[in-house]
Length: 410
Image (cartoon, rainbow, N blue to C red; front, top):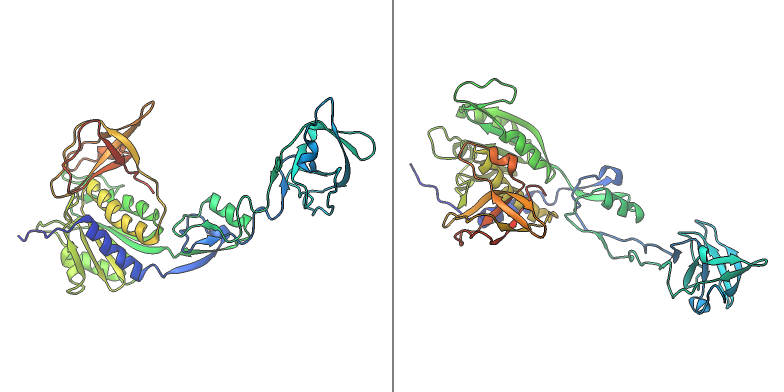
């Protein structure tokens, strides 16, 4: 039995990222704003105009020259002549002179030379168009200046951002009705193993239910990859190859879990190698858990072989596959949280070690407790809300050490 020649996580991510950048990054399209929800922006969008594009009031009141209100009080109001009643949504037409003011509603446009607004609560109508002002205001008080929110030409939404309701609102405000996005990729997801049963099947002795397919289908959605087909395939190389052959040229990714170690029924390597001498790039990662990982390609289709154990499959997917897509597409993701390690925790020498943790918030700090699990058990999934990473050059960490906890979702 040949030993696996393992590669580093960094090397695997780099290889995947280069493939993605070469084959997938140029696949873009433009979609209507209302159909852009959850899509990943493929180029930075810029403000097309100043926002607001006029000086506007933040209150109902009177637009004035600020210095003419200085010293105003209940006992000694400033008297100004109102020369215009500005309507909402209409342009102001007056240009104030000394001793003049103009009524302006909340959100309304100021006369072009007014520099402040005094709230209507601090004013009274005296005789005719005369207004009594009882409060002093400073320059630009109760005013939003042209371009104060956003300047024309400034970045609005960065490449790699995911379009949510906030991003859609920003685009609507700027009159951007078409959004450049990356095309969603298509994936085939397969679980392999005679011991696996479908969710709805009754278990026979020696069987476990397949959870990897459904887990991977959902995880792929985080990087806008649509699973167009998923299947549980028994340990039969000819059947596995025949099924993959049907799909391999119709999808962008084929992801298999199971069949990637070195037993007598480990067919993933044989499958990858059947597509040519250069199809298999990597078999073995310096990672715990998840050493028996495979990467390869058939023309423009990416081939990924993940371990069968759900915990291993999850952590390899997050830190190798998903990380490569995040880097290539510049996808924005949640930042890790600093937390105190609840117990001493060793790591595997020479390997990147990943451990699921439960993150608990205390009054002034977070604490990370490692979710211990034996091979074949998935209870850690139900308690984990993040994971920690010890690089291959470290030897773990002591209790109380501050560690970064990475979220399980983008």
